[in-house]
Structure formats: structure tokens, C-alpha cells
Length: 479
Ligand code: FAD
Ligand code: AMP
Image 1 (cartoon, rainbow, N blue to C red):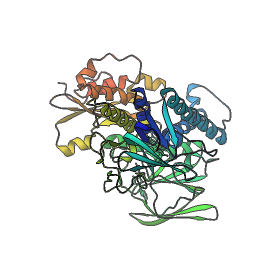
Image 2: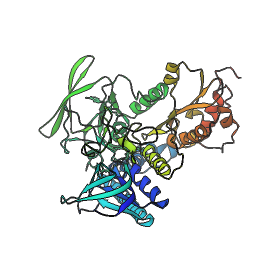
Image 3: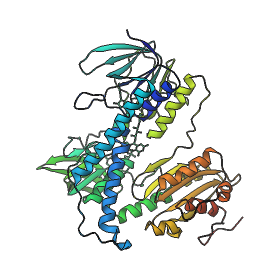
Image 4: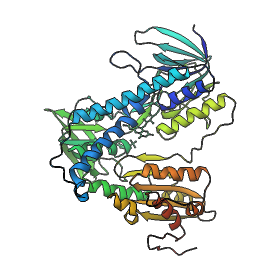
């Protein structure tokens, strides 16, 4: 039996490592158990996000975007480059370097703050104990006053398209191609499918995205989703909705994919196939039968609004619990839990969590969509502003997309903001702050925005809600 920690965190992804650092900063003795090892047997911190998720995907999105810009869009600025080529292995190497820099940064922060990393697989036992099994099968019991489970999620596998890691890959494999596949199939037009499909399309692949649902990005505002589909299709992504993949087989070094659509069964042949049909919580083999922690019907660890499980002093945060599978959601839950362990009345505002798709342009959202407000019968008002009317967007050759603002028609309080357009991720954050402060569109309208900025589009959309936008012809009656 080893030392008893104030906090033992299981998992070092953005939910777990943030909780561990926060706990240590607050003076709690803290350990973080992580099972992920690199080829040399060294523990890899950072979880999905840093190793095979947010960061590597954004590294490839940025490299491939620069390549596409140089190849196709520099000429409008009068720049001629001659032939532009891309060294894919060098692009992958740059991505790996960024990942290593960040994961070793977490190791440095653990050291600096005094978090004890423990390499091995953690299992929650009864009585606030964690069993840790290392790579050699050696077991130890770590005692904790509080346990924070942050075991994350893994890609969903579907029987019709078994991942072989070479021809049929999941999101992790799609970050490692050594060259652009000639023809690339993507199953799933969700966030990950669209981002990874975009990377390889820009690098030269012919990309076909097969999506079972009839609606494109159903969680996004319908108007924004429609615009995003138009823009991505114009970029050459072949997005086929209402197509359910029923079989994928590797034959003679190619992948034969059968799918069902309204007009019958079709077969396509690809060089590679990415399966991006969502993620599921990693909750199996994590809990002893008498741990007292329970799962919901979808395998998520059951928690209340404060991330408390059914077992005393055992919390769970991040992808392994309900809510959007987003890095920042898990990190904030981790901070909330540590504050509650310290006896503070911390809460999480689940209504104001931004989400982004890092295509180009980006698609970003916070709060309610128009279809949600309609379904609730809410009395709302909407304002939009297109980037084609933004001086900064035109100067940057980024005229596609729009900002849409939704507000309560009675109180004027901002209820949501949906953007497809340049730097949408950063623009929406301004509205996240406004919503967190309970702002009205009038507050945004009265705020001075620098000129010329893309942010002015947020200002104008707020003004447009009541027909006061300056740089477009308002269709709406002014109030
Ligand atoms: P994870 O990051 O999955 O970390 C869990 C950790 O726990 C892992 O290191 C795992 O090895 C460890 N672990 C699990 N079980 C045990 C155990 N029993 N014992 C010890 N260790 C254990 N989100 C965004 O917000 N923005 C993005 O742009 C974005 N892009 C993404 C792109 C891709 C390709 C993918 C796949 C995901 C992306 N996500 C993005 C989602 C994001 O990565 C996850 O929401 C986030 O990583 C979840 O954090 P987490 O800490 O809950 O779990
Ligand atoms: P997300 O959960 O946002 O990553 O999106 C995954 C997408 O994959 C969802 O929109 C699903 O409808 C889609 N999907 C799941 N199974 C299949 C399938 N067999 N064929 C095509 N699309 C699928």
C-alpha cells in the first residue's frame, strides 16, 4: 500500500491533466494514472486531444490549408509561386513535433506543480482505492481521498467497416497517411470526418463522404449547416447524404464499399477509407463490480450536474460522461470538480459551451439553434451578417459565410450565435463571453469594435437583430 493522495486522477487527457494540475496548484497531493505508453515504454500524457485528436488534426489542417492557399489562392494577390509541392511525410513530422512539444509540456507542468504521474491502467475499487496495473502486469493499490475518472473515449467501430489500420482506418490512422490517397472514402459527415476529409482533399485526394443521415450537421443551426455544405461542396468534397454504408472490404489493395441510398445499393472503390462515425466512452474494465460507480444505458459514467458519481468522493469528467465530447468541456468540468473538493460552490454553465468544426472556413456555434428555439415555441429574433459585406474579410479574400445572432424577443438577451466564416472559432468566443455575462444584443451593439476586423461581423449581426445593421440593407423593420 502506497501513500494516500488527496486526489487520484485516472487519465491524462484535457479533462484529467487539467484537474490534476488544478488540484496540485491548490495544494492537494495529487497523482495522475495514465496507461498510454510510447514505443519506448514512456508514459504519454495529454490523452486523445494532444496525441491523436484536437492538436494533430489542427496541425494537419493548417499545413494543408497553407498548401492549398499557395497552390490555388495566391494568384489573386498577384503572387506567382511556380509549381508548389507538398512533402507529406514532412507535414506529418511537423505534426508529430508539435504533439511531442505539447505532451512533454504536460510532463513539465506535472513536475512543476508536483503532480505524481503513475504509469499503468487504473481501475476504481470500493473504498476510494485505485488498482493500477503496469505494462508488465505488476499491480499496486493507490489510496485516495478523492478519485476523478477522466478515462475519455475511443472511436466507434461499426461491423460493416472493420478497421485494419492500413486500408480502413479510424481518425488516428487518418492522421498518419504517408501520401494523399488517390480516392478517399470517409464514413460519417460529422466534425471529425469533415476535418480529416478536408485535410486530404486539400492535399490532393478525391474525397467522398458517406453520411447515413439525410440532414447535414443536424446539431448545427440549419441555415449555417446549409451554407457550410454549399461551401465545402464548392471546395470539392463530395458529400453524399442519406447513404448508409453496409459493407467495406479490402480487395487487391483497394477498399470496396457498398452503401444503401434512396435509389438502391451502390458500390464505390477507394484507396483508403476513414471510419469517422463518432466516439464512445471508455468505461469498460474501469470499474470493479463493487466500486459503486454506475454507467448509463449508453456506457457513460453516470454523474449529476457536479460530475459526482453514485460513489462517495468519486467524480467523473470529460468524454467519459454525458455532454458534448469536447476538450474544453472536460477541462472545465475538471476545474469545477477540484473546486468542489475544496468546498467551493463551483458550477458549470452547460448552456454556453462553444463548438467548432475546423474546416476552412470554420463553423462555430454557441447556445441555441434557430430550430431549437422554434421547437420550444420561444419568442426569439434573429440577425445575420454576411462576410461578403465585411471589409476585413474581403481584404483577406475570405468572403464566404455569415454570422447569425439569436436573441430573446422580449428581453433581448443573446440566446445563441452561429457562424460559418473566417476565424469563426475565435469570433464565436466573443459571444460566449457575452452570453456568460448575460448580455443583450444591445450590449454588443453598444460595444466599440475595432475597424477593420472580422469581429465587426459579430457587431453587425447583433445590430441586425433589430434592423440596425449599417453595412447591409436591413430587411427587417427597425425597433
Ligand atoms: P481523452 O483525451 O480521451 O483522455 C483520456 C486518457 O485516459 C487517455 O490518455 C487514456 O489513455 C487514459 N485512460 C483511459 N482509461 C484509463 C485507465 N483505466 N487507466 C489509466 N489511463 C486511462 N475536441 C475539441 O474540443 N476540439 C477539437 O478540435 C477536437 N478535435 C478532435 C479531433 C479528433 C481527430 C478527435 C479524435 C477528437 C477531437 N476532439 C476535439 C475531441 C477531444 O479530443 C476529446 O473531447 C478530449 O480529448 C476528451 O478529453 P478527456 O480528457 O475526457 O479524454
Ligand atoms: P459524429 O458523431 O459527429 O462524429 O458523426 C458521425 C456520423 O457518422 C453520424 O452523422 C452518423 O450518422 C454517421 N454514420 C454512422 N454509421 C454510418 C454508416 N454505416 N454509414 C454512413 N454514415 C454513418
